[in-house]
Image 1: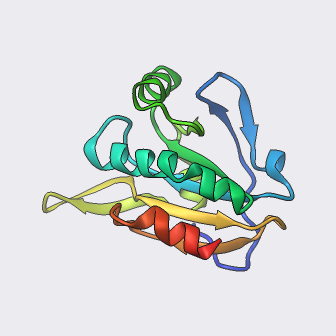
Image 2: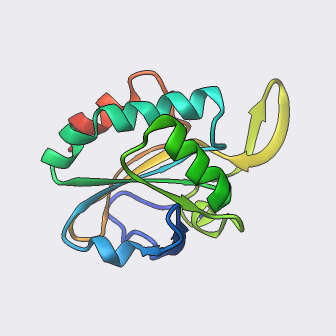
Length: 151
């Protein structure tokens, strides 16, 4: 599947790190930074999460909510969030339905081998529920600054 800038963001409801259910509609009227990452507690994912953590106040001042999404389960999310002192919600997408809807699941090359998995992607959703910007195949270094600039 995938998404297009200007199109309506696919609706979703996923389980959050605290066991609650979180839906995109919960954030109507707010900007949402929805970022998809491969795995809790791995080097690149930890760096990205900590960058979002460290710049969250600036993102919030610009009216944005940050949501991280991976296939990992709640126990993994809770441990990752606690260890890294993350100050935003992590969502679990074990069946990859939301990742697929947002174009963040598919074939990728890792260490020279083709495989199917999470494609590190960030999507900025506007207050109107439409896609404002998509960052496919994110490079972690400097990424959160790019998101801030787009807000």
